[in-house]
Image (cartoon, rainbow, N blue to C red; front, side, top):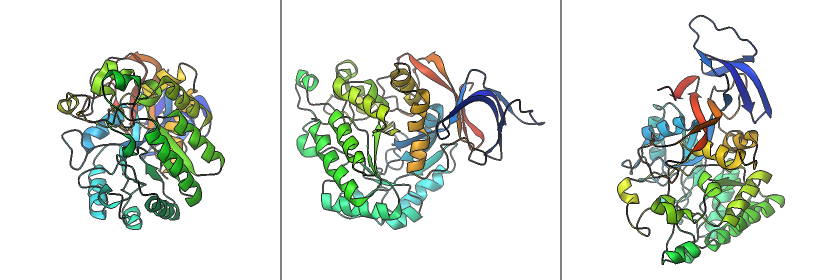
Length: 422
């Protein structure tokens, strides 16, 4: 395959230039000007398109096994490819929980049938109970790329510290869902003017901030590569910034919904704007953007969380939290961050490619000779409106929005995983 006249944008090398890219046997084999196609070689015209490393999402829920009425490995991979993602990391809060070699082996074996790379995180604790540590060494040997009890906070600080020490020993990241339930009466909605208007007590930001402060200290003491997942509070951003300066191996994820929306979205979109942690204030949103700008937040992840229409049609307090995000993430990054001038396109792509690849030791995230040919071609100027999804679910407040940045091709391992022509 030859990709002709693409604007190659590679954050790992901080380069952007127009060129041709030849792919053979699943790897990048030549990058140059005016490459001549060989007989039988497929040619893709990329005039006016950006070629970047395939996007990497460190935080998705494919609901498989156990909740496949919401999503499964196949539909999740289709959604990922449509969004430009060639690699995703699935969370461990499935049924059964990914806390055994048998479960992770089953998932990874079935994942090999899909057109993108599906990686799997294992849980920190058995059954997500926060009491007994999983056999992290055995799970790592079985293919786990990291550890997390995402969806549930680890409330026992001593237990978490021991788990961090083990993760550091294995040189693998440990990712944390930071919401102390003792502060929360109704999750998924910020405690503030909007929750008061709805007549409920929501989830105050201190629920996140208190655990972030504790866990940043534990990260500093343990040396573990620690990920603060889906950060939502400006104070949390400041805490991460401070402990990074002290030398902690800290990383933070921001989701497109947290850097695009505020708690006011709940009044407009109802349960489609309900997620954990919740959308917060405009001040918090701006602090997240500032954290993205200065590198405090080094990863953009979707927290892709599919739910059925029936579940989301329940009342605001009864409906589950979470939205889908894979198919709109790049466009929201361009629309909410790049076009207003908060980030350059290179900076946006850095947080969606090389940073997650380096943290999780993934074999992608770069466009280099000899590397796996994982690539996205997109038009950053094209406007489009999401109306239908390849995900099994459609729980998104962004349906019907006009967005900038259209994925044209997703290529994984040298093969087309998605084309907007099909």
